Image (cartoon, rainbow, N blue to C red):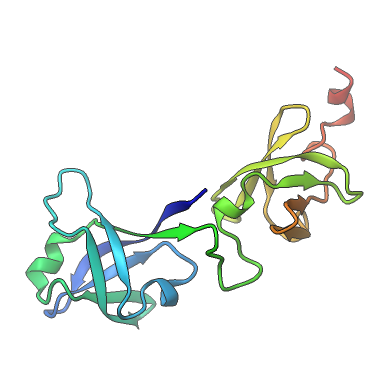
Length: 184
């Protein structure tokens, strides 16, 4: 992977008369992604005639747990209204890592070897599935089955991206098949 485009937000309704907009945040690092001076790529919704390909953050502030952004490219409410629904994205490279050492980007996890607590290889991470309660690791077991493992510390106690593996506290039916299923 050389680089990957990641959606970090979606422009909502205008706020005030100076062109600020609400933003539906889709990143765990909004302060870094939407820092004043940051340039963000634009993905207009289908059928949109939005002229922008990038936007530069002019102002960023939180108002009652809602992120409000102003952009250099516009300064009034009418223009901000025309931007509703635009997706905001950034490009990540292999070298980009989250600021929190216990967080990982999807592309860092895909392809990692899955080991059980004894160090035996039991599969490979194929991707990360976002979930309502927690994310799930999609694991291709060594016998070819696809399984889902809740990405919580109790079940995934170790992630070693540099070492190329994750450890799963496997239980029958999680990655390894139930004993009755293994005999078939």
